[in-house]
Amino acid sequence: MIVPTKSSEFIVPATSAGQRLDRFLVRELPEWSRSKIQLLIAQGRVRVDGAARKASHRVGLGERVHLEIPRPAEAGVAAESIPLEVLYEDADLAIINKPAGMIVHPGAGAASGTMVAALLHRFGGPSGLSAVGGPLRPGIVHRLDKDTSGAIVVAKNDAAHRKLVEDFRARRVRKTYLALVHGRMKGAGGTIEMKISRDLRRRSRMTARRREGLAARTGWRTRLRLDGFTLVEADLETGRTHQIRTHFSALGCPVVGDTLYGAPRRERVGTQWLPPLGRNFLHSARLGLVQPQTGKSIEVRAPLPAELANYLDALGRATETSTAAIDAALREFL
Image (tube, rainbow, N blue to C red):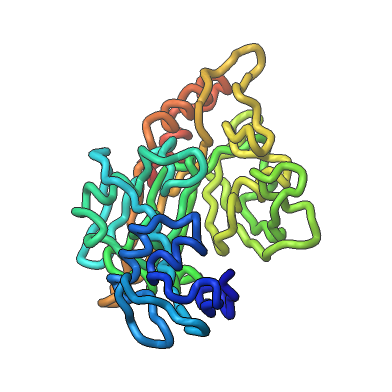
């Protein structure tokens, strides 16, 4: 038997002396094929007493065989011809208007149809995007949830990526969302400060009801009141997972359509049922940042998707809210 000194270094015992180097390793590592062993030897990844040897080398008693095992390459993402709306682009970054229903990068249960696959097609493969996030997340600086639409920034090179990450951490990136929530938010605006942590009972959710957690702060302003609903503009002052959804749900005002956080699948106003929205009424409407190279201020607005504007119109008719009031509330976001 081989006596390992480290995970990839072995001492040749008397019973193995005289064997070919490749056969010696195959016998002791039966899960590996001989061809794979021979490839590693040819690449210089196998050394005997510090010297590279051929596969035909006969190992001797007490020799130390060091095997350098390369980490398996993480599979990348295949480019897909999926349309993308580019709101802004320069040599360092792009800002995309992500539609609801699109997952940002591959993960559990999502291998295709992602924004990353669309980005690879749009920007000419991995060389057109930053590599800081690894082969599964080229260009991805931050995320939006699957059922959240709107502006999301993408880095086109590593220097821009690192600077953008630094700006996000330092809260120099301004993120404004438009959300329709249940209930009547009190006052014209305010700030929600509640720690956010993983919900121990439902791991897919976050919660603001535990003492433990990360500090989270959401500023909000009322844009429009409808019977039983409030349209709010929310600023993320921190960037926690599901922050807006968690904070408004904790106040008893979940985002419309967000069944994970307590909203019904369909809304009813009096005896009238509204058509199912099929997504969360949450949209990344405005993104403000500093260009990584020039320091120039950039502000980009993502138009409110038609399905959200139409839903708000239907809700307005059901609640007898004037069209003029809805138009005034949405003027900045259409």
